[in-house]
Image (cartoon, rainbow, N blue to C red; front, top):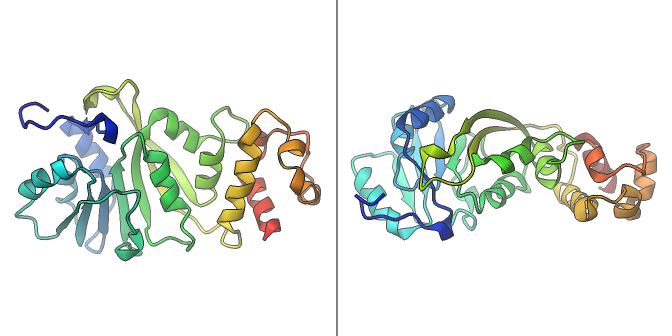
Length: 259
């Protein structure tokens, strides 16, 4: 980090991958062809970018918020013709401007905004979305919440909203030692594949129900979801259950009834 005079910014959640074997392994999981548009979020100094640019793709778009890194990226990839470097905040960008059905989103996401970015891509009003896969790295604890099944302690809003729209698969753990600076926790790489199971559901209704249910996690749903008691009765859901006891499917059914 010191030899190129760039110091990672804690305020931006920057932890750069320095293990080349890990980068090659991650790249090998990302399946592309000559029509694939890859969008990389938070490329940092371009460690993963160097692997992605070697793959069969039509174009690679990298989005980096930190202006200090743009010169490094532009210098490293000045000979590459199929790359576009965008200096913007990934949370504020309008992805509809360049996403298409052959798009793949990839990112070693800054841990401090990873959940917000995921929700931005999962809560799109138009579904199926204009991308076919996402390969994203999260803090291990956040990843476990995304993967969690009902009945578990980690299960909640992140699990339900994400799983209502995507099949989520754990690929592998990223040990903290592969990063610089080294975080206190490990990371986890997840694969997201959009599905069409709930096209007749209003995602905003689902989010409203889930937010209300988990606002008081330890209380029974007859209290937290009292405005929807009639819907719970229609679905024969026991109102003495707690929010984490309802499956993703049951929450989706509630949202469909609201519609």
